[in-house]
Length: 314
Image (cartoon, rainbow, N blue to C red; front, side):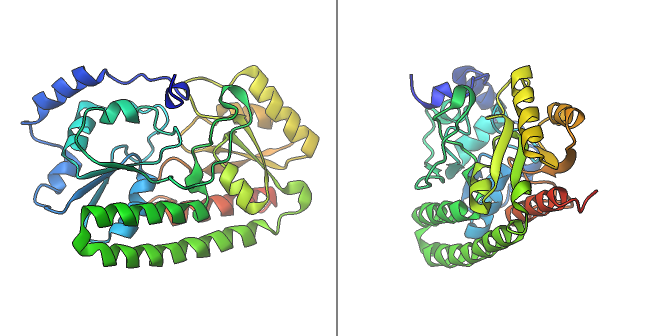
């Protein structure tokens, strides 16, 4: 069985049926995002989720129209593509996905489409998951390290230059400027989290989405479930998190914006830890929210973690 097919279950509509329905809708009026770009003749780059879209926009500048298949707040792992998504993808000039088994639905989604696609995590040194059924498989949340995202940027520069050779020098310049910003945020992240005392250097979250951030900042990671699949936390997973928090006197625990915090609140009730706040991983917020860009997402998460673990938000 292919490695990708083991990672998450697929609940997507069969491709043939979805494609037929998508074609039947092709003559209908498109909604929202596509209406807004009806008169925009720039090449279309379609990403699988909002974080990738923001990174891509920084590289593309004004030369390409970048869109995200999933909307703000969507849970990316078990996403079910719609016929409208399939139509948009078939009309795109380039599709970007994260890879590393993140988008379980992606292979079926693009099957049979004559649209080039690029895996932007290509070249990242993966951290393997160490627990549960996914042990030994790569943790897909590589973008939670600004160092890794610099590799994403290089891959995007190459892909955009292939798509639009006349603007290659602009993509190169945009990429270098954005990588400098990424390095600044990386340095800020490491410096800010370095102030935590040794006994507070533990990051307990709902999903194991912070392995790369924890590695960068020298934190010990613990989570309730390794990957946000289609299941609730088991009693054994919650018990394991409770024991870790108790054994290590962890002062605060966290959960992600796209999943329920209820399992983590059970950990809070059973320990002396407080709920430290909501962290963002798989999705940006709306423009007026706390994390409208990737750089702000990383800064937000670092601030929430530091304030909670040092008691500044109590």
